[in-house]
Amino acid sequence: MGSSVYAVEAEGLVKRYVVGGLMRPKRVVEALRGVSFRVSKGIVFSLLGPNGAGKTTTINILATLLEPDGGEARVLGFDVVRERWEVRKRIGVLLSVERGFFWKLTARENLIYFGMVYGLSGKDLRERVDEVLDVVGLNDLGASDKLFEEMSLGMKARLGLARALLRDPEVLLLDEPTLGLDPPSSVYVRKLLRSLAEKGKTVILTTHNMYEAEIVSDKVAMIVGGRIVIEGTPQELKKIVAKKVPVEVKLRGTIYDGGEGVRKDLVKVLGRPVYLKFSRDNDILEVRIVVEPGEEERVVEKVLRVSQSRGLRVVEAKVLEPSLEDVFIVVASSGGKDGGG
Ligand SMILES: Nc1ncnc2c1ncn2[C@@H]1O[C@H](COP(=O)(O)OP(=O)(O)O)[C@@H](O)[C@H]1O
Ligand SMILES: [Mg+2]
Image (cartoon, rainbow, N blue to C red; front, side):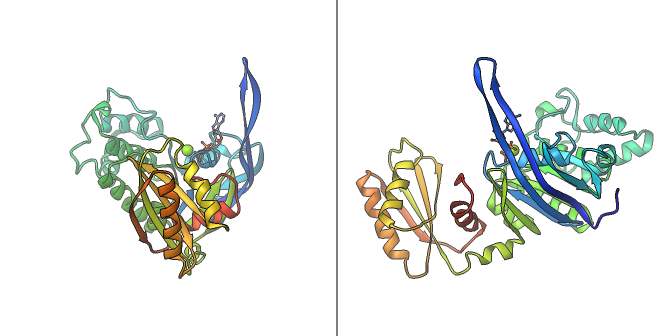
Protein backbone atom coordinates (compact mmCIF):
# COMPACT_ATOMS: atom_id res chain seq x y z
CA MET A 1 0.00 0.00 0.00
CA GLY A 2 1.51 3.33 -1.17
CA SER A 3 3.52 5.82 0.92
CA SER A 4 7.05 4.46 0.89
CA VAL A 5 10.19 6.49 1.38
CA TYR A 6 11.53 4.78 -1.72
CA ALA A 7 10.43 5.41 -5.27
CA VAL A 8 11.29 1.85 -6.21
CA GLU A 9 12.09 -1.29 -4.23
CA ALA A 10 13.01 -4.53 -5.99
CA GLU A 11 13.56 -7.62 -3.87
CA GLY A 12 14.98 -10.82 -5.31
CA LEU A 13 13.47 -10.44 -8.76
CA VAL A 14 13.71 -13.59 -10.83
CA LYS A 15 12.67 -13.88 -14.46
CA ARG A 16 13.04 -16.85 -16.81
CA TYR A 17 12.28 -17.00 -20.49
CA VAL A 18 11.63 -20.28 -22.22
CA VAL A 19 13.10 -20.22 -25.70
CA GLY A 20 13.03 -22.82 -28.46
CA GLY A 21 10.25 -25.34 -28.70
CA LEU A 22 8.73 -26.50 -32.00
CA MET A 23 11.74 -27.66 -34.03
CA ARG A 24 14.38 -26.68 -31.49
CA PRO A 25 15.03 -28.04 -28.03
CA LYS A 26 13.50 -25.97 -25.26
CA ARG A 27 15.91 -23.97 -23.17
CA VAL A 28 15.38 -21.74 -20.16
CA VAL A 29 17.13 -18.36 -20.10
CA GLU A 30 17.64 -16.99 -16.60
CA ALA A 31 17.27 -13.31 -17.37
CA LEU A 32 17.14 -12.17 -13.73
CA ARG A 33 18.67 -14.24 -10.93
CA GLY A 34 17.59 -12.36 -7.84
CA VAL A 35 17.81 -8.65 -8.49
CA SER A 36 17.41 -6.35 -5.49
CA PHE A 37 17.83 -2.61 -5.26
CA ARG A 38 16.19 0.45 -3.77
CA VAL A 39 15.88 3.87 -5.29
CA SER A 40 15.29 6.95 -3.14
CA LYS A 41 12.92 9.59 -4.41
CA GLY A 42 14.16 12.48 -6.51
CA ILE A 43 17.34 10.95 -7.89
CA VAL A 44 18.66 9.66 -11.19
CA PHE A 45 19.37 5.94 -10.87
CA SER A 46 21.10 3.99 -13.65
CA LEU A 47 21.01 0.29 -14.25
CA LEU A 48 24.28 -0.14 -16.08
CA GLY A 49 25.26 -3.32 -17.87
CA PRO A 50 26.20 -4.99 -21.16
CA ASN A 51 23.76 -6.46 -23.67
CA GLY A 52 21.73 -9.30 -22.25
CA ALA A 53 22.37 -8.30 -18.63
CA GLY A 54 18.67 -8.05 -17.79
CA LYS A 55 18.14 -4.28 -17.93
CA THR A 56 15.09 -4.26 -20.18
CA THR A 57 13.53 -7.15 -18.29
CA THR A 58 13.89 -5.20 -15.03
CA ILE A 59 12.34 -2.06 -16.52
CA ASN A 60 9.47 -4.10 -17.97
CA ILE A 61 8.74 -5.61 -14.57
CA LEU A 62 8.78 -2.21 -12.84
CA ALA A 63 6.55 -0.84 -15.59
CA THR A 64 4.05 -3.68 -14.89
CA LEU A 65 4.44 -4.99 -18.43
CA LEU A 66 5.99 -8.27 -17.35
CA GLU A 67 5.38 -10.36 -14.23
CA PRO A 68 8.39 -11.68 -12.34
CA ASP A 69 8.68 -15.44 -11.72
CA GLY A 70 10.03 -14.73 -8.27
CA GLY A 71 10.64 -11.87 -5.89
CA GLU A 72 8.67 -8.67 -5.80
CA ALA A 73 8.86 -5.00 -6.63
CA ARG A 74 7.10 -1.88 -5.50
CA VAL A 75 6.85 1.53 -7.09
CA LEU A 76 6.02 4.31 -4.61
CA GLY A 77 5.00 1.53 -2.25
CA PHE A 78 2.58 -0.15 -4.68
CA ASP A 79 3.17 -3.74 -5.70
CA VAL A 80 3.84 -3.98 -9.44
CA VAL A 81 1.71 -7.12 -9.77
CA ARG A 82 -1.15 -6.81 -7.28
CA GLU A 83 -1.47 -3.02 -7.50
CA ARG A 84 -0.44 -2.53 -11.10
CA TRP A 85 -3.13 0.09 -11.79
CA GLU A 86 -1.90 2.25 -8.94
CA VAL A 87 1.62 1.91 -10.32
CA ARG A 88 0.57 2.73 -13.89
CA LYS A 89 -1.02 6.03 -12.87
CA ARG A 90 2.25 7.18 -11.37
CA ILE A 91 4.88 6.23 -13.91
CA GLY A 92 6.06 7.49 -17.28
CA VAL A 93 7.66 4.83 -19.44
CA LEU A 94 10.02 4.96 -22.40
CA LEU A 95 10.82 1.62 -23.97
CA SER A 96 12.16 1.39 -27.49
CA VAL A 97 12.57 4.89 -28.89
CA GLU A 98 10.91 4.11 -32.20
CA ARG A 99 7.98 1.99 -31.16
CA GLY A 100 4.40 2.84 -30.41
CA PHE A 101 3.94 6.03 -32.38
CA PHE A 102 1.86 6.76 -35.47
CA TRP A 103 4.19 7.30 -38.39
CA LYS A 104 1.72 9.43 -40.36
CA LEU A 105 0.98 11.81 -37.50
CA THR A 106 3.11 14.72 -36.34
CA ALA A 107 4.86 14.82 -32.98
CA ARG A 108 2.12 17.08 -31.61
CA GLU A 109 -0.70 14.93 -33.02
CA ASN A 110 0.85 11.82 -31.52
CA LEU A 111 0.98 13.48 -28.11
CA ILE A 112 -2.61 14.71 -28.42
CA TYR A 113 -3.66 11.15 -29.17
CA PHE A 114 -1.86 9.74 -26.12
CA GLY A 115 -3.07 12.62 -23.96
CA MET A 116 -6.64 11.68 -24.89
CA VAL A 117 -5.93 8.06 -24.05
CA TYR A 118 -4.75 9.27 -20.64
CA GLY A 119 -8.01 11.19 -20.16
CA LEU A 120 -6.91 14.75 -20.94
CA SER A 121 -8.97 16.92 -23.24
CA GLY A 122 -9.64 20.43 -24.55
CA LYS A 123 -7.46 23.33 -23.49
CA ASP A 124 -5.73 21.33 -20.75
CA LEU A 125 -4.62 18.78 -23.28
CA ARG A 126 -3.36 21.33 -25.81
CA GLU A 127 -1.48 23.25 -23.14
CA ARG A 128 0.06 20.14 -21.62
CA VAL A 129 1.19 18.91 -25.03
CA ASP A 130 2.79 22.25 -25.80
CA GLU A 131 4.46 22.24 -22.39
CA VAL A 132 6.07 18.81 -22.85
CA LEU A 133 7.10 19.69 -26.43
CA ASP A 134 8.93 22.63 -24.86
CA VAL A 135 10.50 20.60 -22.09
CA VAL A 136 12.01 18.05 -24.48
CA GLY A 137 13.18 20.75 -26.87
CA LEU A 138 11.05 19.75 -29.87
CA ASN A 139 9.53 23.22 -30.13
CA ASP A 140 13.01 24.73 -30.22
CA LEU A 141 14.05 22.30 -32.94
CA GLY A 142 10.99 23.30 -34.97
CA ALA A 143 10.06 19.61 -34.99
CA SER A 144 6.73 19.64 -33.16
CA ASP A 145 4.75 19.63 -36.39
CA LYS A 146 6.99 17.22 -38.28
CA LEU A 147 5.58 13.83 -39.21
CA PHE A 148 6.93 11.08 -37.00
CA GLU A 149 8.32 9.28 -40.03
CA GLU A 150 10.34 12.36 -40.95
CA MET A 151 11.90 12.79 -37.53
CA SER A 152 15.51 11.93 -36.72
CA LEU A 153 16.21 9.34 -34.03
CA GLY A 154 17.11 12.16 -31.63
CA MET A 155 13.73 13.82 -32.24
CA LYS A 156 11.94 10.51 -31.77
CA ALA A 157 13.70 9.95 -28.47
CA ARG A 158 12.61 13.40 -27.32
CA LEU A 159 9.05 12.60 -28.38
CA GLY A 160 9.23 9.36 -26.40
CA LEU A 161 10.27 11.37 -23.36
CA ALA A 162 7.51 13.89 -24.01
CA ARG A 163 4.96 11.09 -23.96
CA ALA A 164 6.46 9.67 -20.77
CA LEU A 165 6.08 13.13 -19.19
CA LEU A 166 2.51 13.82 -20.36
CA ARG A 167 0.83 12.82 -17.12
CA ASP A 168 3.48 14.50 -15.00
CA PRO A 169 4.48 11.18 -13.39
CA GLU A 170 6.46 10.92 -10.18
CA VAL A 171 8.63 8.12 -11.51
CA LEU A 172 10.17 7.78 -14.97
CA LEU A 173 11.29 4.39 -16.27
CA LEU A 174 13.48 4.83 -19.32
CA ASP A 175 15.06 1.96 -21.22
CA GLU A 176 18.25 3.15 -22.96
CA PRO A 177 16.93 6.66 -23.60
CA THR A 178 20.04 7.75 -25.50
CA LEU A 179 20.69 4.58 -27.50
CA GLY A 180 21.73 5.47 -31.04
CA LEU A 181 21.25 9.21 -30.60
CA ASP A 182 23.50 11.84 -32.14
CA PRO A 183 25.75 13.53 -29.54
CA PRO A 184 23.76 16.79 -29.25
CA SER A 185 20.55 14.87 -28.57
CA SER A 186 22.28 12.65 -26.01
CA VAL A 187 23.60 15.71 -24.23
CA TYR A 188 20.16 17.30 -24.26
CA VAL A 189 18.45 14.18 -22.93
CA ARG A 190 21.01 13.78 -20.12
CA LYS A 191 20.55 17.40 -19.06
CA LEU A 192 16.81 16.93 -19.14
CA LEU A 193 17.03 13.86 -16.89
CA ARG A 194 19.12 15.81 -14.39
CA SER A 195 16.67 18.72 -14.38
CA LEU A 196 13.72 16.35 -13.86
CA ALA A 197 15.42 14.88 -10.80
CA GLU A 198 16.13 18.37 -9.50
CA LYS A 199 12.39 19.02 -9.73
CA GLY A 200 11.78 15.99 -7.53
CA LYS A 201 11.05 13.31 -10.12
CA THR A 202 12.70 9.94 -9.78
CA VAL A 203 14.42 8.89 -12.97
CA ILE A 204 15.38 5.27 -13.50
CA LEU A 205 17.22 4.58 -16.69
CA THR A 206 19.15 1.75 -18.23
CA THR A 207 22.32 2.20 -20.20
CA HIS A 208 25.36 0.29 -21.35
CA ASN A 209 27.27 3.55 -21.64
CA MET A 210 29.67 3.87 -18.68
CA TYR A 211 30.37 7.50 -19.36
CA GLU A 212 26.68 8.31 -19.41
CA ALA A 213 26.04 6.46 -16.15
CA GLU A 214 28.91 8.32 -14.52
CA ILE A 215 27.84 11.81 -15.54
CA VAL A 216 24.08 11.51 -15.25
CA SER A 217 23.48 9.35 -12.17
CA ASP A 218 23.23 9.97 -8.47
CA LYS A 219 23.41 6.22 -8.05
CA VAL A 220 24.45 3.35 -10.29
CA ALA A 221 23.77 -0.38 -10.06
CA MET A 222 25.89 -2.55 -12.34
CA ILE A 223 24.04 -5.57 -13.63
CA VAL A 224 25.76 -8.53 -15.29
CA GLY A 225 24.19 -11.86 -16.17
CA GLY A 226 20.96 -11.13 -14.31
CA ARG A 227 22.66 -10.09 -11.08
CA ILE A 228 23.53 -6.75 -9.55
CA VAL A 229 27.28 -6.96 -9.04
CA ILE A 230 27.84 -3.62 -7.35
CA GLU A 231 25.90 -0.51 -6.43
CA GLY A 232 26.67 2.98 -5.22
CA THR A 233 27.23 6.58 -6.20
CA PRO A 234 29.68 7.01 -9.09
CA GLN A 235 32.19 8.39 -6.56
CA GLU A 236 31.80 5.40 -4.25
CA LEU A 237 32.21 2.99 -7.14
CA LYS A 238 35.28 4.78 -8.43
CA LYS A 239 37.01 4.35 -5.08
CA ILE A 240 37.49 0.71 -6.03
CA VAL A 241 39.86 1.75 -8.80
CA ALA A 242 41.15 4.99 -7.29
CA LYS A 243 44.64 3.56 -6.72
CA LYS A 244 44.81 1.67 -9.99
CA VAL A 245 46.01 2.75 -13.39
CA PRO A 246 43.99 2.05 -16.53
CA VAL A 247 46.17 1.51 -19.58
CA GLU A 248 44.69 1.66 -23.03
CA VAL A 249 46.47 0.28 -26.08
CA LYS A 250 45.06 0.63 -29.57
CA LEU A 251 46.00 -2.04 -32.08
CA ARG A 252 45.51 -2.12 -35.81
CA GLY A 253 45.58 -5.11 -38.11
CA THR A 254 43.44 -7.94 -39.36
CA ILE A 255 41.32 -9.35 -36.60
CA TYR A 256 39.01 -12.29 -37.26
CA ASP A 257 37.81 -13.23 -33.84
CA GLY A 258 36.88 -9.95 -32.18
CA GLY A 259 40.21 -9.99 -30.37
CA GLU A 260 39.64 -13.23 -28.47
CA GLY A 261 43.02 -14.67 -29.54
CA VAL A 262 45.02 -11.63 -28.48
CA ARG A 263 43.10 -11.54 -25.27
CA LYS A 264 44.01 -15.13 -24.42
CA ASP A 265 47.67 -14.53 -25.29
CA LEU A 266 47.77 -11.44 -23.10
CA VAL A 267 46.24 -13.18 -20.16
CA LYS A 268 48.88 -15.91 -20.51
CA VAL A 269 51.82 -13.50 -20.90
CA LEU A 270 50.83 -11.14 -18.11
CA GLY A 271 50.69 -14.21 -15.92
CA ARG A 272 48.21 -13.15 -13.25
CA PRO A 273 44.71 -11.72 -13.07
CA VAL A 274 44.47 -8.80 -15.45
CA TYR A 275 41.38 -7.01 -16.62
CA LEU A 276 40.85 -6.58 -20.28
CA LYS A 277 38.22 -4.96 -22.36
CA PHE A 278 37.99 -5.02 -26.08
CA SER A 279 35.81 -2.90 -28.24
CA ARG A 280 36.02 -2.82 -32.00
CA ASP A 281 35.89 0.38 -33.89
CA ASN A 282 36.91 0.45 -37.56
CA ASP A 283 40.04 -1.66 -37.74
CA ILE A 284 41.17 -0.66 -34.29
CA LEU A 285 41.18 -3.01 -31.38
CA GLU A 286 41.23 -1.28 -28.01
CA VAL A 287 42.80 -3.12 -25.14
CA ARG A 288 42.13 -1.76 -21.70
CA ILE A 289 43.99 -3.17 -18.77
CA VAL A 290 43.72 -2.06 -15.18
CA VAL A 291 47.16 -2.30 -13.57
CA GLU A 292 48.88 -1.31 -10.35
CA PRO A 293 50.89 1.96 -10.28
CA GLY A 294 54.44 1.40 -11.59
CA GLU A 295 53.48 -1.51 -13.82
CA GLU A 296 52.41 0.56 -16.80
CA GLU A 297 55.55 0.33 -18.91
CA ARG A 298 56.15 -3.35 -18.34
CA VAL A 299 52.55 -4.13 -19.28
CA VAL A 300 52.63 -1.99 -22.42
CA GLU A 301 55.86 -3.71 -23.50
CA LYS A 302 54.22 -7.09 -23.10
CA VAL A 303 51.17 -5.98 -25.04
CA LEU A 304 53.53 -4.78 -27.77
CA ARG A 305 55.26 -8.15 -27.99
CA VAL A 306 52.00 -10.12 -28.07
CA SER A 307 50.57 -7.80 -30.71
CA GLN A 308 53.63 -8.16 -32.95
CA SER A 309 53.47 -11.92 -32.73
CA ARG A 310 49.92 -11.69 -34.02
CA GLY A 311 50.80 -9.24 -36.80
CA LEU A 312 49.10 -6.28 -35.14
CA ARG A 313 50.50 -2.79 -34.88
CA VAL A 314 50.30 -0.66 -31.75
CA VAL A 315 48.98 2.71 -32.91
CA GLU A 316 48.56 4.27 -29.50
CA ALA A 317 49.24 3.50 -25.86
CA LYS A 318 48.16 5.75 -23.05
CA VAL A 319 47.58 5.88 -19.34
CA LEU A 320 44.13 7.07 -18.28
CA GLU A 321 42.28 8.36 -15.26
CA PRO A 322 40.23 5.63 -13.54
CA SER A 323 36.58 5.70 -14.58
CA LEU A 324 33.41 3.67 -14.06
CA GLU A 325 34.51 1.60 -17.02
CA ASP A 326 37.42 0.33 -14.95
CA VAL A 327 35.14 -0.44 -12.03
CA PHE A 328 33.09 -2.51 -14.42
CA ILE A 329 36.16 -4.28 -15.81
CA VAL A 330 37.40 -5.11 -12.33
CA VAL A 331 34.07 -6.16 -10.87
CA ALA A 332 32.77 -8.07 -13.88
CA SER A 333 35.94 -10.11 -14.35
CA SER A 334 36.37 -10.99 -10.69
CA GLY A 335 32.75 -11.49 -9.66
CA GLY A 336 30.07 -12.14 -12.26
CA LYS A 337 30.28 -14.31 -15.32
CA ASP A 338 30.13 -12.74 -18.80
CA GLY A 339 32.95 -10.22 -19.09
CA GLY A 340 30.90 -7.81 -21.18
CA GLY A 341 32.50 -5.25 -23.46
N1 LIG B 1 11.25 -12.33 -24.85
C1 LIG B 1 12.35 -13.03 -24.60
N2 LIG B 1 12.43 -14.34 -24.88
C2 LIG B 1 13.53 -15.04 -24.60
N3 LIG B 1 14.65 -14.54 -24.04
C3 LIG B 1 14.65 -13.24 -23.75
C4 LIG B 1 13.51 -12.40 -24.01
N4 LIG B 1 13.80 -11.15 -23.61
C5 LIG B 1 15.06 -11.20 -23.11
N5 LIG B 1 15.57 -12.44 -23.20
C6 LIG B 1 16.89 -12.87 -22.73
O1 LIG B 1 17.01 -12.50 -21.36
C7 LIG B 1 18.29 -11.96 -21.08
C8 LIG B 1 18.15 -10.54 -20.57
O2 LIG B 1 17.62 -9.72 -21.62
P1 LIG B 1 17.32 -8.19 -21.48
O3 LIG B 1 16.54 -7.94 -20.24
O4 LIG B 1 16.71 -7.74 -22.75
O5 LIG B 1 18.79 -7.60 -21.30
P2 LIG B 1 19.37 -6.14 -21.62
O6 LIG B 1 18.22 -5.19 -21.75
O7 LIG B 1 20.28 -5.84 -20.47
O8 LIG B 1 20.14 -6.26 -22.90
C9 LIG B 1 19.08 -12.09 -22.37
O9 LIG B 1 19.80 -13.29 -22.31
C10 LIG B 1 18.02 -12.14 -23.43
O10 LIG B 1 18.47 -12.85 -24.55
MG1 LIG C 1 17.74 -3.89 -23.29
